[in-house]
Image 1 (cartoon, helix red, strand yellow):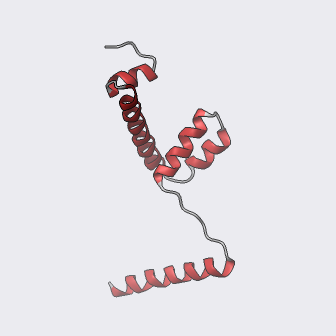
Image 2: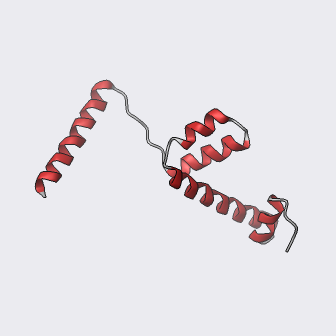
Image 3: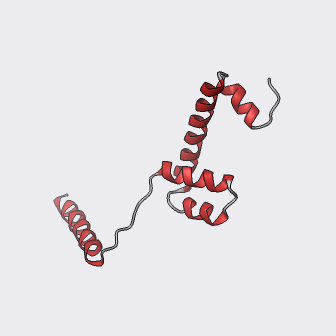
Amino acid sequence: MFDKVRKSWAGFRTAARTEQSTGKTKRTHNLFEAAAAYVSACAEDDQERIDEAAGWVSPEALSFGVNELACRAVIALARERDESPRTVARTLLGLPMA
């Protein structure tokens, strides 16, 4: 067990030294950054940015982030309009009121 920990730590130290020596650090994006970039690129029909944002995280994580963004947006609009989230969501999608 300790051998695995030692090897993991050694790999981490090597990676950290490599980043320091090259002066380049690879920025990682979280799923919410990816979702925000993806959705805004879709809204602007920018395929290059769509592809870039889609590569930041796994497809599952991106799907979760987009879903979370949609939920938060509908809630914010519902509060702003003093309407129910259901009404706002149906209006945004152009659906008739049920």
